[in-house]
Image (cartoon, rainbow, N blue to C red; front, side):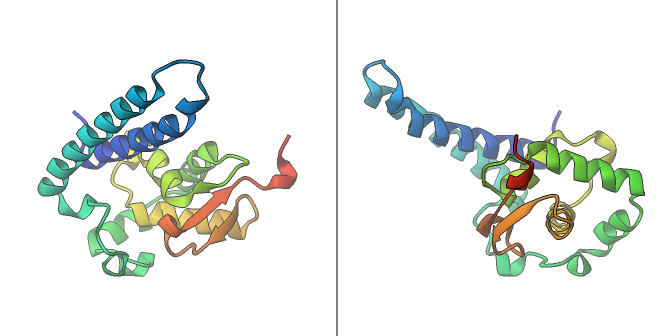
Amino acid sequence: MGSLETINGRLLLALETLDKAAKEIGDLPVKPVDEYVAGIREAGKSIAHIQREINSLQPELEMSTPEEHAPRSLTELPLEQWELVAQLTDSEVQEIDNLLLSYAKHSWRKGAMLVALAMVSQEPHLSNVPEMYYSERIKKLVQSGRLESKGELHSMRDSEVRLPVSKAV
């Protein structure tokens, strides 16, 4: 059974995918497009309902939580999470970086989406690594030139990242 955090991450991915599908469905040579979009909207409502249930069980997963209450740096993490991050080996840090880079594209993508994708697909031995650490790794990848960014990197929801354009094939 998946954790509530993992399930919530998968639901966020599903919502993003449904949103993209709803936007692109108008390009299909099928009718009635309105009915298909309405069906996608209904699926989104069902996912939102499930997320509300998850958030009632684990409120810290709620997307609408004001970011000013969330940790803004690793030093603000709760002690048990800080200790976990401090114990990561160099190879585990590299594994996290590689995972983040594997979901980056040459087109812009929300930093929060990269974090969610990486956290959902992480190996079990990294399952307790906090979201903030993934955000910090994105900042390091930008600083090293392995990713480009725009927006405010202190807020993954307000920033976008991509693989450097000069490396695009």
